[in-house]
Image (cartoon, rainbow, N blue to C red; front, side, top):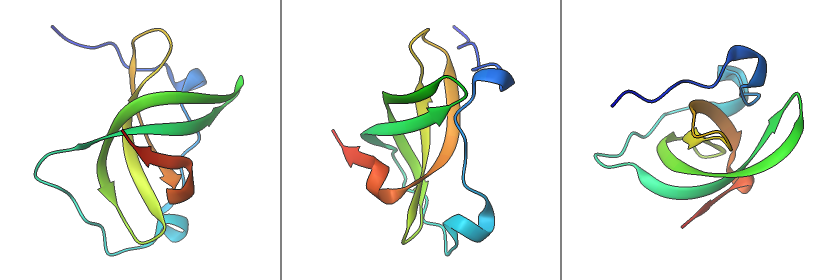
Length: 82
């Protein structure tokens, strides 16, 4: 069953390459996380998985409050393992 993506207007703000830096580590299996995202509607804690990270940031695949899937690079201190 396909998961609906988060609409562009409601996606989390994501860090750019200059902010998240490198090198990028990609695990064989994503790690379960809880993350704070920032959208046009404000801040929200979401469940997701870490699909990549650098020394200072984490790329998270998350599920929003409507069950839709999104991706965002977030500062590492906004993400905790579940």
